Image 1 (cartoon, rainbow, N blue to C red):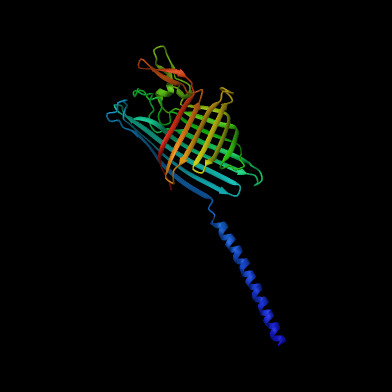
Image 2 (cartoon, helix red, strand yellow):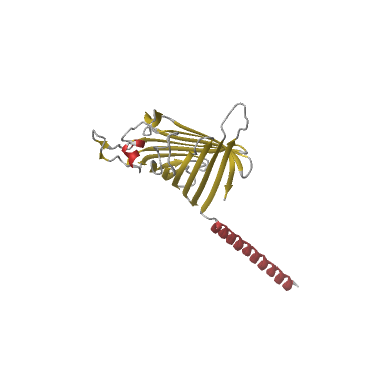
Length: 321
């Protein structure tokens, strides 16, 4: 009996030990599979359409029938592995307005490509070594309405490029960050002969003789090297209301140090459901190299640099895919 009891106890111990090891091996295998299944790339696409329309029929107070549309497309491709992050974004936005007795007019036109790479030294620090690239331009001709004869902008006239390296601080970098770059290149591109010869967007104008003949063509690219500071902030004000802010400050070392270019965007999204939302936005730009124009007696008269402001209010549909 004692022998049988000892054999039974031994068998039970061996079985328990094997079962524990099996569970441990399985747990380790599951952990390895889970770690391998985490994909470093995250790709998102978002398309939106905002519409507004006003129609009058025998309206005593008067008015003009109109319809406006704004389309947008955003694609992002983000990479994250260990302490390295790489975020890429393409933004396309086009808007138009049609009023009674008027031709179609452009209300918005944006092409923007951005890429930033950050390296976090360790998980304790909130500082990242960071490098950034940004390109901005437009697709269609821009006019100072009602003048449609002389475009004041077009694709790559202007085009802006920023390329620099610095440091970025962000405890929760997806929601709030501060980027400091003491060495950032800014290139202003004007690939249009007429605009370049006139010195539009800060490039060197053409040199002409007394008869107005061009002796030396206007500059096509203006290069600057300076300091760039950007700050971004994103939060949920309420369960269905999102708030975003992005401000960029840039000053050139050589040409006009201390004269700060400002680019500030604010956006408030009111979410109705997964596909319907209302957006309220504000965009302020000040660039000393950009002159404004005013039509006087059929002529475009330069008014010098001024603060530019654009306000957006729209209701539309959004699709994520």
